[in-house]
Image (cartoon, rainbow over all chains, first blue to last red; front, side):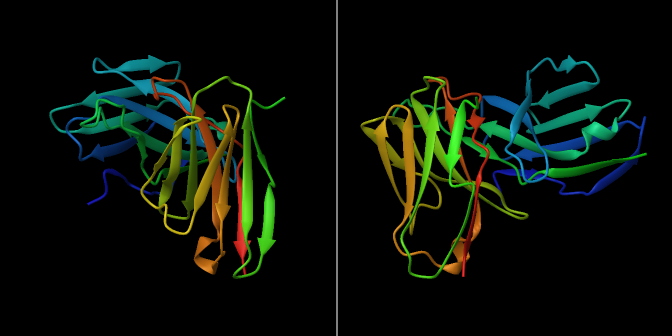
Length: 115
Length: 112
């Protein structure tokens, strides 16, 4: 089982639509959660962190459910410029030596917003 | 100027050749990482370094080696390239919290 699993899509939605992506993670000790965005043939960039209480940044809302080990990203009023691959990213807490574990990236969900 | 740079941006080579990919950063971060990305597999960690004297293997280090020449420089070598090392390679940096990573623009490597 992959440590971080995402529906690969693709999701093709019209402009103005609301779209939701889901992600599950297997390491219950994970402590930090993020959504990154990656445009075609470009590097990943941080979109937003995900906090336990849920958080919003403009049209984007992220939710975390630790009990179910589930993360979501909601995009409202989709724009053409939202077309990209969205990567769910999890920091696996701390190892036995106390050092921070590395980030684990999901394989991404591809979104295309259509005019 | 970009905070994290990678050279070359594109490289085509032949099986058995030695290849070095270079990464430089101006963010002053201690931590640097090398990933490869293949379609449908996401980013896989090859090696990471917490400082100049601390280098660690990632999940797919076989066939690769690294050198941390300075805080700002981290290079990845393929001693004898093989076709299944054809991929997009990213360098990244982070501060000591390791939370947010900043990526270079990537190197597209093709091994024939």
